[in-house]
Length: 224
Image (cartoon, rainbow, N blue to C red):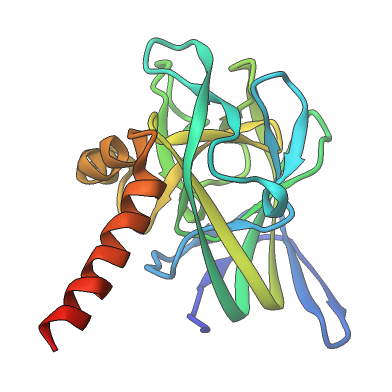
């Protein structure tokens, strides 16, 4: 699925990797709003509760990970479920910060915890990746503000993109605090998914779901 992304730049360097990716390094960037499906790159590193990391494609439901609480603390929480989507082509943004760690690769409509560079107050909120500009701040797992120094756009083909869901609605990815939601604003999605998050909190959910499916199947056979 391809969508158009308009980008204005002051300095641009382009590199094409044959048959695999097309990358644009953007020194100053503003990207138009898009409602493409939002997810993380499937090989993104997720910070577990013990501080170690695990690639997203190896993460499983029930794993304990670190999350950001509304109180400002970092705590452990359980992965309630993981949504996977297969796409023939995906446009990602790569967010580079001052600590020179591996960049965070996510789709433009996914949200990440940010603070705008021109805000004098310490106003922190979740913003779509396409709204992040060079000079803005994102936050590490220790809640240290890291300035964005570069943004790259990249196209990858035949990709599985994934999003874990936690009860708190966020997760630590490549050592940055990011939302579990995309397409619509974080606060709206967090309220909308409240029943779903409570449903997934039920420890016996998977067994209960299995029971319901087979009960319906049995009932359909009896009714015939």
